[in-house]
Amino acid sequence: MFTLRSPLVRFGPWLVIATIALAAATTGLASPDAQAGSDRYGGDFPSFYGAGTIVLDGDGSDLYDVETQKSAQAESFSDGDILFFAYPPYTAAVYAGVAWLPYGAAYAVHSLFAIAALIWALAMLRPFVRGAFDGWTRLGLASVAAIASYPALRSVLGGQNATFTLLGLAAVARFDHDERPIATGIAAAALLYKPQFGLVVIGVLVLSRRWTAVGSAIVVSITLYGVGAIVMGFDWVGTWISAISDFGDLNIAVNGHLMISAWGWVQNLLGVTTVSYIVAGAIALAVGVPMAFGLVTKRWTAIPWYALAPLIVVVAPSALYYDATLVLLPIAIVIGWATDRVAIVVVGTIALSWTQVFAGDLGWSPLFPPILAMAALFALSAVKPDRLRVTPNRYTR
Image (tube, rainbow, N blue to C red; front, side, top):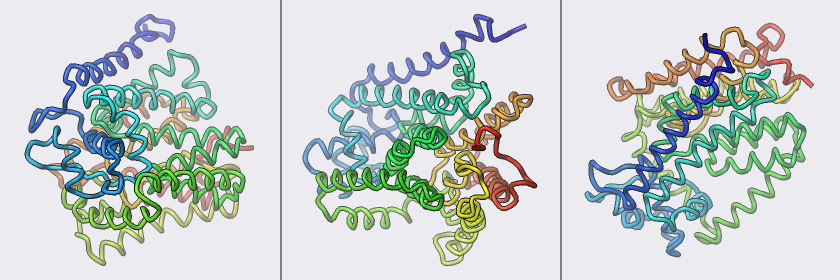
């Protein structure tokens, strides 16, 4: 019978992770240049790599120009196609840190950092999970379970950054738990690399009156604005908003079946219409208002970041299936206070996550309904915290 002391259990998970890391690194290093057409690899990474090269070339003022992005991604798309980069310019500046490398090496580095971020995020959650991740063996098992989920695996191997978002949110939760408000604010502001998530997290700090954390988040936000100004000029905010507004409708048309936010999911089904905005807005308010009420009235004894994770995904203006990686945060906490059901929780979560492979045939993401249900459950617990107790004792101060 296998135990935590069994060599297979102790070393097997880390061997699996090392194999995945080696496969990603080998793919990149064996092919220094992005291959064209159907042989292209790297998933969405050409978008980030291209944006980084634009910044390195000193063409930041044209960052959102379609032709400039096409030129930067020419190695990846021989047919003139493009993966539009819609992130803020300071995010492009971060990717300039790997864009000086050949494409393959940059992809390899990015993949390794994405895996490390996932493991680090789980390590940050240790105070909340009653020893479930304590020690290298348990952390290795948890990491394999996490990377086995479809959104996390696709994010790591597909050149996306959802594991970095998970790390950022886990850091916010950990620093807030440890009563380190300045670090909490810095971590929250770091999530502004994806503003649709970062702004929600900072809004939670405001509602919870974590003023020191809010102050440090503002300082970092101003710094990020300054980086954007260096890249594009001081009027970059208007240019960026205009670019993402133009990109929004096209994104729904192309990636609608991948959307897991209320706005994207509903618009994919009903079209970009007034009715879809009303329905999506009603969904966002239904889960957002109770949570805001719980935070403002301090019905929660501490900020339930694990409960806010699915809420952030639901209310975000844009979230694709790989952003479901954030749901690993509440699942990890559930493992902590339901240790007798760990196997059921883990296997069920992994199995459910792989239903996303049917999204193309369905025409919509099957991940949205369960994430919405989870957000609704936590919203209800914010209103009736004593009747529906889902916050573990470790959150109580």
